[in-house]
Length: 281
Image (cartoon, rainbow, N blue to C red; front, top):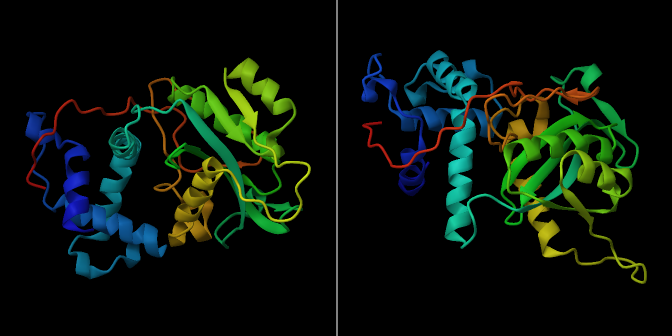
C-alpha cells in the first residue's frame, strides 16, 4: 500500500496490548508488512502457504495475526472506522439512516462444496449468490452468501436482520422489484425497516438509466469481485464480505442454504477509538 493509504489506516489499527501495560512482548514484524501480506492473499486468491518470501514475514505469523484480528472483531472495527471517516468527509452522519439491497449470482469455485451451491434459473448460473447491502454512498454494510437457488426475498431476511442488529439508526432500504411482496411487510413487522421498491416505469421499454442510488450498489459489487477471493470463492471471502458492527450478544442462525462466511455467531463489541495512539508499527 502507498504511504498515503498507510497514514489513513495506521491510526485505526488494533492497539498492541504491550503498549498499554497489559503484558506481552513487542511485536516482531512491522504491521504495515502484515497488512500488505493479507491484502496480497485477498487480491491473488493464493493459499497462505504460498505467500511470497519477499514479504519477510512467515506465512504462519501473517495467518495467526489475521485470525486474531478476525476473532477479536478488529477487522470489523477497522472497516467501520474507515467507512465513518468517508461519510464524515462527505458531510454525512457517521452511521447511515438508509441503504440499498441487491443480490449477485456468480459461479462457484471448485472449493465450494456441492451442498452449498445451487442453480439460479433466472441468471442461468450454477453457484452461489451474495446479498449485498450498502449505504447511499455505496459503502459496504452487510453481505450474506447463499446458494444461488435461494430467492432474493429469502436471502434478504437474514441480511436485513443482521443490518438491524448492527445499525440502530438505519430505517429505510431501497430495493428493486425482486424484493416486492411479503418481504416489505416482514421487514416492517420484524426488523422495523421500511423497504421501498424502486420500479421501472411501465410505459418505458428497452434500456433505462437506473437511479444513481442503485448504481452505487452495483459499483460496490464490482469492487468485491475485483479480488481473486471475491471472484472465485465467496465462501472464503472472510476479509471482504463483512462490513459489520459487532456487538456483544449478537447472534444469527443462518437458514437452510446459507453459506458460512466465517462470521462468528457472537462477536465482541467493536473497538472505538476516541483518540489515535501512536505505535512504532
